[in-house]
Length: 356
Image (cartoon, rainbow, N blue to C red):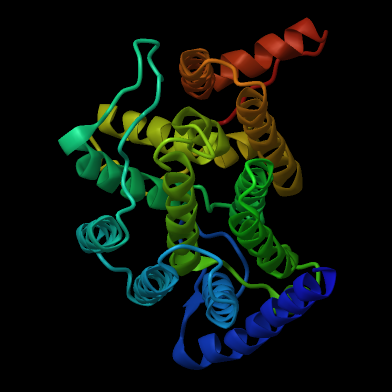
């Protein structure tokens, strides 16, 4: 197993180096402008390299995941569309149409859809019936865009992905689903070379970005695994409410941003600098401190979800607790100046003026 993971790690590293050269030849690079404050033209190949590595592994090790051919087709299609978006900046409407089509393909051919929310509200199991496919489409689009929107500073998407895939791996292993658990571990391993290069730890000249190709592929893989694990008839491996905690940070950040943009009468998909990672840097955190802080928060949320699963805490307790945490999150983001200065005051520190 260790040799297998090591070999996958080496393949993922090699693919990154290979795709960097391809990206420069075809112009698949991120050019600094406006919100993008990095230096130089950075190859957008992290997602492409990870996708190739995972598809190669699944193809050469059949039986790891149900409907493996369909899964590989879906992530390859999303990665290809993401590459086109990275290069040509496709419209939001087109991306949503593609994501919707992929969702429908997943539902129709794999039978993977939301059928029950469990006893999330404390009134018994909520069976979705005909609403299942509709909610599934929204869940897929939401998860894809949640991971896409959170990709704002070096290492963050990779770090949050490791937290999520690692948590899913632990829960699946605990449920006895060793093959899917191992696939999640492989995803974590393939993410490590990307993070090393994304953070410039193997040389600033070898830096790469994930790109929309990677964030879309990762978001889809997460929701595919969560739906498969939580909608297993009779004995779900992961309860639906637990999924909320495993993707809490990307999900809450996306919803909070969309609410704020809609209130400002802007498109919910219009980019800005109001994400959690931007606010952390605005209050004085360095990029590495921001990365560590957000990944720590995500790990705590995932830990809460896993504890709820292991100790079988009632689903409605977990759901209403999530709503409380989300409400606090919304308040903190909307009033972060007051929150930070309140904490500083309690610690005996002077107040600071935070530039909006």
